[in-house]
Amino acid sequence: MTGDKMIPAWYVLHTKSRAESVVHEQLLKKRIEVFLPRIIVPSRRKDRKKMIRMPLFPGYLFVHSDLHPHHHLEIVKTVGAVKLIGDKHGPVNVPDETIASLQIMVASEQPITTGTFFTKGDRVMVVNGPFSGVIGSFERYQGQDRIIVFIEALGQFAAVEINAEDVERAPAIPA
Image (cartoon, rainbow, N blue to C red; front, side):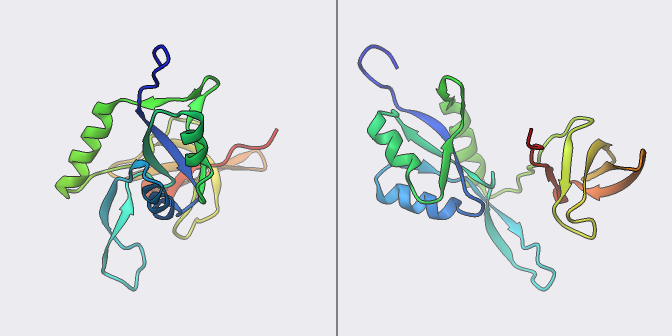
């Protein structure tokens, strides 16, 4: 903000799980500029060979606002919205160039590779496949789209090789 004039910027809005489209539609109805980057991916269901549109960043979308207290409240009280992503000083804006680049990428409808980058020791959880529900620590990347996860038990460890897309960062352990 400069002086008394608030300058609009892009912010990241965290949503409830699988609520991105609902939040997107509701914000559009409120006349709030919103961007939900979506990509076309093959369905994960084994009984389908269908291509579906999915959010590029599950659980997140972008809103353009000056964050005037009234606008801020309208955004966060939208059904399905959780919070604007930020630090101790408040929501952190995303550079316009980043949003423009994302808009160009998703408009091209070319394949886009996404994923989470893990570092050794990160606590991870397997979310798909035969090891679904297993919590362990990330060890290393093993070739294209494969990772090694260590699971500790009884002072020993077991390691499994898993598809990278089947692993997410595990929730933090409550203190």
